[in-house]
Length: 282
Image (tube, rainbow, N blue to C red; front, side, top):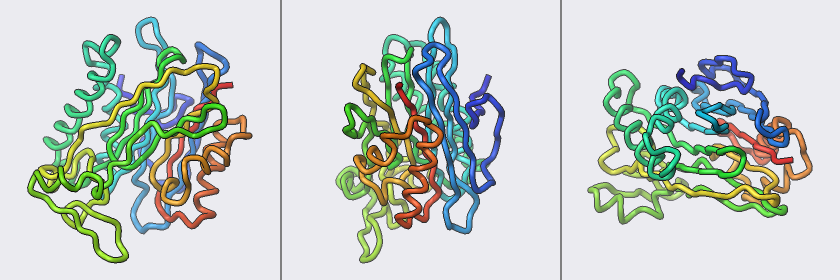
């Protein structure tokens, strides 16, 4: 079955043309783990380009929490494709249970290859991604390409688990592939003067200068972990990791926490599409 789920109630939600979408759910293995998400369209004149996966899924004799933010650009088709296929491809890897990090890396690359092969259908756009797989409530594996971010809160302190792949920090790699990084006054650094991230899925016209190699981080979930935030860059452009953590640290309901984070970002004049997932360990 394809993971074409946006809603944690296991309702097939499909596209995100609406201004707002929201949902919540909980682990069946542990009543102490809950999750919620909230999404809001920004002030741009295009359709919502963010897609979310937020659910628990039984796999063999284990339970997997599957959480992801896909932030599309130049259209939403690549982000939608990732929503439908990336986790499926990860879980199909034969050594997912034994070599989880390597399996995730291979699945990121193979999924990107699928997207590039379907460029005529999916268009010339691309998408960033941050994914988190929670294995039996005990082990968290985070991977990302681009600038969507994962932050964990332990004992009230925020710790970033993902890496922001900015063109300025990967300038040498981009130039070694024959590309360049523009740095015009009043604008952010861009690959070939176009894309504001150094790694992404899709973007066929830029792919020779881009990477789809994910950074992968493993975190053990112990009693000090309070919650995890996954969010698109619409939050991180206006809030630090600790600001985000402090904003929701007293909000016990994960869905309400995700919504509050987005509202806080909008109050700080974030104009981007914003998607946010909060996973709470009670």
